[in-house]
Image (cartoon, rainbow, N blue to C red):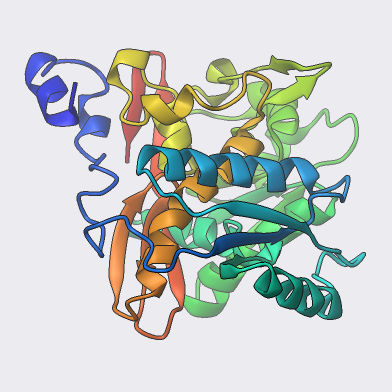
Amino acid sequence: MSIAAWQSSYPDHVATSFAKTLKSETGNTSPKALVLKMQGNVALILPFDDPLYATQANAFRLGLQAAFTKYNITNKIKSYASIVNTDGTADKENLNDLHAFAKDEDASYFIGPMADIGISTDNEAQAISQFAMRNGMQNVLIIASDNLTSSKLVDSFVAVWQNQLGNQANVLKLVSNEIDLKDKLQVTPHDFVLLAISANELRTIRSELDISIPTIGFSTVHESDVVDGKVLYPSNQTILNAIRWTDIPFLFDGLLPEKNQQYAEYHAQTEPSMSNDLKRWFALGVDYLPLLIASESNEPFIIDGLTGQISLDSSGATSRKLPIAKLTYDGLTLE
């Protein structure tokens, strides 16, 4: 059933407002035909052998292959294991060697390095700051933790909120065995709370948050843990109740009833043990097919994809807009 048909059949469903925002994945895509001009291989130059990144690289490949299969793309996908430096950057000499090697093996398209294809925290920061400004929010209290991931989230948001928009931001860092968080929240004036923490940390402090104050999270609050091959807290519906957060449309779509999902075909191809982080990399792989095709035309285009609204300008630079949603016990609503 199409989105339009579903809206007609279920006009009063709690997910109707969200479904209205979901468009066909090819409806706003340019070029219109999903066909690669060249017949050579597609070279994935990603860290397939690195224990820190291998599962993400493989999830990306799985998503790209799913898109190729759906649209009958016959080009072969070949993997080349790249090297990642200790600071997370790609080894340039290694990349150049693998690029030359792949070209000798009849590669026409090249994807990599890892840092160039992931979802930037800057995209999430932009989505959150724009939502706050649209709703007249000016005083933010950022709840953060003392780790590198949280620091990157805070820096990304402050770069937009403070440096670009001129607004002030107060940061409250969690400490071990936090027992007076509620008191600290009351002391610092704010009209919304930003969560730059993990799902597990949110679970720990959830009872301390005042749900009457708008609370927005990065995608890190919508994560699932995988232990011994089993997914724990797959939906986080209890801790995320009444909280807004930014994420990719593919994961928001996964919170809808199965019969209402736009991307049900792709959901069926994700592995049961996949964390939300790996599902994001799978979705990135799916969206990379139209990006490859558009790169051949040198023309601007926009795609409403699994990972957000992606724009490609004439210079080849891409940008991504992400949605924000709120989960209540009545269902999911896109803000």
